[in-house]
Each structure stands twice: as structure tokens, then as C-alpha cells.
Length: 298
Image (tube, rainbow, N blue to C red; front, side, top):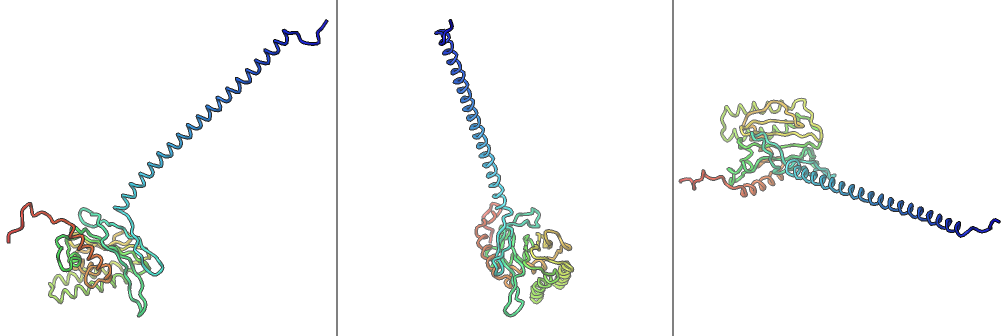
């Protein structure tokens, strides 16, 4: 006779089977949870590693940028010199390589704007100028009435002026304007009693100077540099490239730099500033030892 209900043995077997199923499900859930937690930990660790790597790269970039900025600040930093009435400016290098034997990196002594009168009530800006030389090379002129003018006429001191044009001009017009000032300087020296041979040589050098600019076009933004070395030789460069031949004539070089450094400067505000800066700099530069000895005998 069959029983409609399960026997006690069957009930125990069923109960045991249900327990095993529950244990397997619980074990599976525990394993899945553990794997999920392990995956989350690995993900967090990877994220922390990425963050550390990014921080290291950021510090490296900042350090590199800081080094580059320091190098730029001491060698190639650009200074803005304003001109015109529209808030425009020209970037002028804070330092410039001279034509001396050491290729010295000379500081910007002063800068300014050349304004030319073209009508009774109209002035136009022509170029922005930067004046460069080594103050320590000028120590011998300390105490002179006009040390800057003395430096301009000292052929043993390397110097550079850099003109950045703010309008299109012809090379001939630039040469003519500068030559007028040079001729005035040379003429005044001739009147004060100059050597006839040196005057002739200076005039020939001036003609060479003017001939360099024939058929030359100077566009807005172009730089024109005049550099003299320690032997009184003038080298001219347009956009960094040499034009014409170098001209060796101390009188020409002196008259050229007097155009911006002398008492009749075409940019008197800059000349005044440069003179003041030079005087202050010369006071701070220590005098060279007199070969270890005391004051020279009277």
C-alpha cells in the first residue's frame, strides 16, 4: 500500500538536499562578492598608481618649465616698449649678443621710441630702439661729465643698438636720416680741428654706410642692428642677416652712436634714462685692483 506522504527518511534527504543547495548558493555569493571586492581594490590601486604617475609627470613638467623660464628671464626675456596711441607695443630682448671677442651677452641699458615730425602738428613713430653694452667695460669713464657720450665715442667698447620698425620704410630713407646726424657730428669735429686724412676716411666710410641701404626695403616688424666691436668696426644686420661689408672707422662709429647717446640725441628721453642708469651702474661696479699695490705715485 503506497503512502500519500513521504517517509521520514525521504524528508530527511530532501532537507539535506535543500541545505546543500543553500550552501552552494551562499558559497557562490561569497565568492562573487570576494571577487568584486578584489576587483574594486585592484581598480582603486590602479587609480592610485595613475594619480601618482600624473603627479610625478606634472612636477617634472613644472620643474622643466621653471628652468626654461629662468633661462629665458636671464637670456631671452622680451620686454614690452609701448608706442603710438592705440596701446601697441614692441617686444625688445632684455639682452643682446655683442660683436666682441667673447660674444658677451649684454643687458638692455635703455629703450625708447623714435618719433619724427612730418607736419606742424603731426608726429609719427618710426622705430623702437634698444641700447646694449656692458657697463663694466665703461668703468674707466666713471666721473666724466657725460659718461654715456664718452662710451659712444670709445671705440674700444663693444656696443649694439637694435631698431625695430613700426612702419614700412625704405632703406634709403633710413640711411639718409641717420647719415644727416652722422654728418653733423663729423662736421662739428672737423670745425674743432680734426685730422684731414681721418676726415677724408670718415667721409668715405659714410658713403659706404649709405650705399648698403640702396634697394633695401624695411618692413614693419623688421629689426635693424648696428654693432661695433673693440676695434671700431661697424657691422650692420637686417633681420639678423649681415648687409654690406663691415666698416672699420672709429669716427663713423662714434658719430653713429652719438645719434642716440650724445647731447643732441634724436631720442632725448631714452638718452637721459640711459645716462642715469649708466651712472648708477658705474658706482656699483668695483674698481680693478692696481696690481695689488696702493695708489700710484704722484
